[in-house]
Length: 178
Image 1 (cartoon, rainbow, N blue to C red):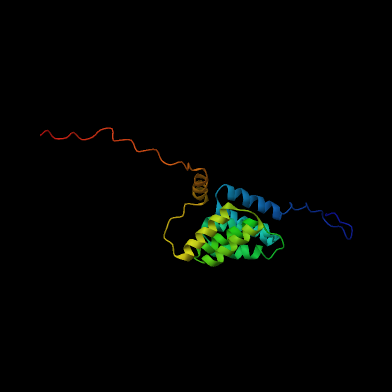
Image 2: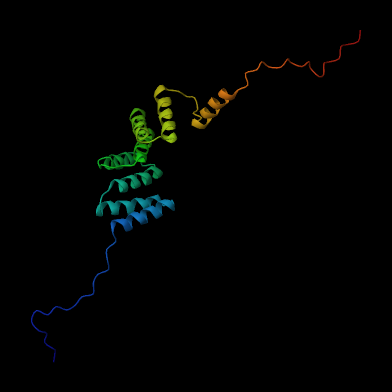
């Protein structure tokens, strides 16, 4: 014989384990990024974005896309991040890099200048110079800011005294005997 349960009785069910939060997926994506597993980082950032989209998540996924060479996706993610009220200056750099590698140098330059307007950035300044070189059609190699700073510093500290008289050559060729 079976036991009868009182009317309205519900069999207790074990609670389901907690579902991973957006932060859990963000942290897992960050761990994958640091471990240079950019494809998996994109998966985790995408899952986190599905749970709770934020500018930071779009920026992080854009960084992973940048490492994967998915430059159009970089621009799309940063454009999505820029729709939020607060973004980091590096968002503009990532957008600029995506545009640069897509060959859109004028738009890339504007993104790097936007980063510079938010904070001083030697890296963004170098990228602006790269954009200017591409826009001008220059084929000269870019040496970066470090070279320019060394040249400027040496020009300020250069010795302005006249050069010493040239010393005569230590060895002269012997004259032929007559």
